[in-house]
Length: 447
Image (cartoon, rainbow, N blue to C red; front, top):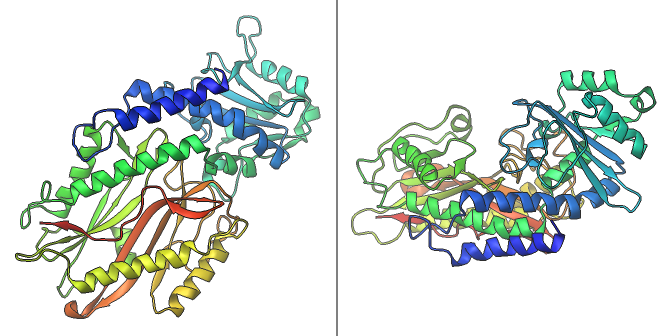
């Protein structure tokens, strides 16, 4: 498909989202039909291959990128390149990207089936029964200085070549090319983390959907105070996502903090989960929730307060606690700078936050084709002094992150410390860090 036509189709689909009737509930933004989703995914894939792949391959000095997968044992990156109507690879699927003399990228599929419009069919099984010989013919035609394979120590996403496929490749590859094998890690991570403008435009809409579902869940439409339990609410989120023909990439969680004698153990909750409790007036609720839509993922944590009889707003001490959480977000995102490593940003942000009287824990991760995606890791809840490997990876522009962190605050009326746990999805570009659909600055209220 001509590149201009691709852009027009993407714009048309985005316009459809603005003009279409709302999906099911008045507070949930419009959601594309399955056919429209497939069209958007396939056109984004073609745009990315045509406009993004050449610059990435040149930047990382990779002449040829080779991805190999067998059905139901797919390379995580190969799955981001398959047509929308393909739910898995078929038999042995081989994808190949080669820089050509014009500086563009030629994309081939050496497979028994045609794979969408992005890839030129590189194997005619009737004319050439041996799939590996068909691959070798293409390799010899380009005579690359290197052939990159998906092997990686720090990112599981970029380590998708399994031993069986590697052994088969090496058994069939001409000896002249065996010493040209290199790791595709820098290219693989860049492909996963980089977002093109059309994706970012759609990402705003996807996060708006996630926010709307949270707002609906944290309302008297769903919660009956004194009856609904936290586990009831968890399963409501799962059912609501299915009703909207969407998917979750992890099981949601609901936490309750309240004026009782129970301390809130953040680390224990991460490892063992939250207890199931009946939601009561005066509770501070917390949700961790994410959806998958159009191959992109969201990851959001927000808070709600359950009003007591006669209350019209949350108590001032909880409002102030949220403001301190927002302050931590601001301190943290202000440290983002192209080329800085995740560990450098983490260290600087923690020092400034602690210096301003906050009690921060920062555990921000890349976001995109995966919920916990490839790219720069900025702390983990149990690694506040830095993360070896992916924490040493530098920040790049046009990348997405879940700005995930918490701040501990002592609440005098409750005589204990609580955690304001926030997570909002954002883009880092030349303007800095900005939130795809804003961030929570006021507690949601449950009547």
